[in-house]
Image 1 (cartoon, rainbow, N blue to C red):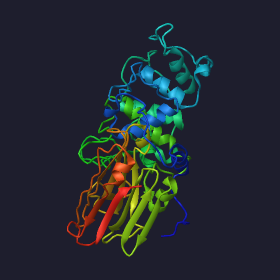
Image 2 (spheres, rainbow, N blue to C red):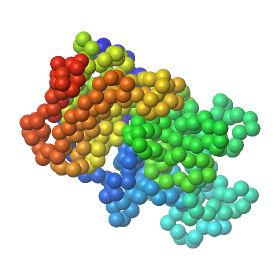
Image 3 (tube, rainbow, N blue to C red):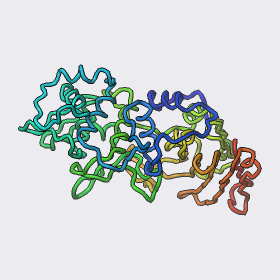
Image 4 (cartoon, rainbow, N blue to C red):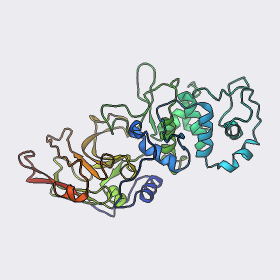
Length: 390
């Protein structure tokens, strides 16, 4: 492999990773007390809290699985656009302020009127109401999120005869932020890479435009759209790394020799040697870091080593005209103890299977004392595969 090859990874997301994830990361506290409800939304929820877009509830919870109402969404969109708390009132002064169902002096008044001044909130068609306490439907969410972060889609996003919300769907789909699965019946929307984290659970919405939007969905949509540096270009949301990009981002040492792969990662604190690639080569192997901020912030990070597959047997088709199969994955968990690393390696369609785990350890030295070695009794194509803490 050539370590000096030109990287094609999204520049903004690459820079974000480099700044937020210094090498030799250590465990920290979760940003919210109810992180067991985050599923694969941890990264988005964490990043949006760091950006000051979401602050959570007074009891320390985020409550990502509850519906967001129109007043709450207005506040989130205003703050996510870069407008600061001390300038919201002056922004609101530019609104027509014609809504008849606004409560005098309510906490949300300036946010809604600021959003109206910006053109993101127009109220109900033909009426002077905005219904601040009502839940936001997914079609409305697509419109308001795109309008606040980009503007009104035009050109290739407009198709004659489509529903009013389809230009926004087309925009999000074109940038690979959401999927629009082809179905014979009603269209459902999902996030790209859904299922890659957990094959048994849906990641994100499996919803129609009439579905109510959850708080976690808003965090996810904003995180994904903000990860794209140029929304006017063909750039897409792409957290999947080549091995070179993975090495550069996390300071890992990656070696491929004679059909075997070795990785030493000081950031997540693990290494393995002599992993047989079978019929793959290093150029085909990719890495998807799921929840990369989790490990040092009281949650769990997953490093999925994957490869393109026409069948898309693991994660399904629809990402770049193809799918991915998972080669194996590394789970780095800082939740159970002060330091805990759990390895679970499995294969998909590569004709070998093995499992290694080092868990419930209280220190790095304890992990180092019990490395996992897979020998020829478990894997006939390798003299050994050694897994240990970095």
